[in-house]
Length: 332
Image (cartoon, rainbow, N blue to C red):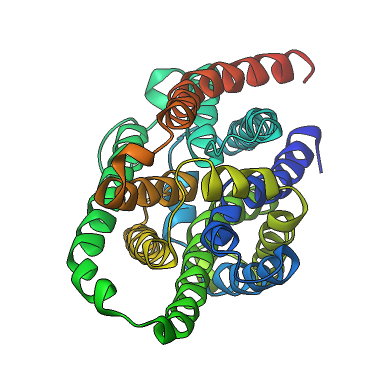
């Protein structure tokens, strides 16, 4: 194993861990906001379903990620290392200050910048299907879709909610646990595939996913799914608090609407092969319910900080990916 391959393999593992820290914790935000159980119990629930989602995930998203760059196999390993480590470093820095930024956007930006540095502009799939523009368009559109769906569900369910008696709180809370599990499984099937794709392509020695056996071996699946779930507990608590309590004080029925909407959007993206950002979808769904119920109670300063972080992610990671390839090339 050469230096580039070692960096790509460790970068994929680190990416799975960082996706667990930055995106995966959003699945537990509603349960934390509702104070349904202790954080430990909520985290354990999330880990179980994230791991399951990662294990049963397909390969469509993984192939979309690896297929963003078209360079020779030896250069693709370098590009994968650059893209994953750039996303890891940038996301780690933002998670440290509690911002739910997207390692998915960072990975796309890192791969694009690294691809240009390694093989020129033509080496990157910019358009057509899920190229860089297509992926970014989907990532940018998904929050609006999630917010709109959550807003619509909240408006339609409000007459029913107003008639609910106090005894209905138990089944509503039960539904929230189910919805949070659905978000965790959906995140495992989408975010899990990103790290799996990078790791499988790096280990193949050819820089591609093998066509046989689904393209991703069971050891790769279990490793990435496990890292995704475990690190959602180890490092994601600050992100959970930001999403759960610093945008608006939602009721359990509001959280049920937002989590259900987010799960539906993420599942659809995984089915189509779009490498979506869980953090943007969950956060936007929560905003959608807030706009429906209590728009004046939304903390717009916090939302501005989150949006600012999202906007700077792509260019910052593209520059970082290009720099990584340049530096690594100087030592080869």
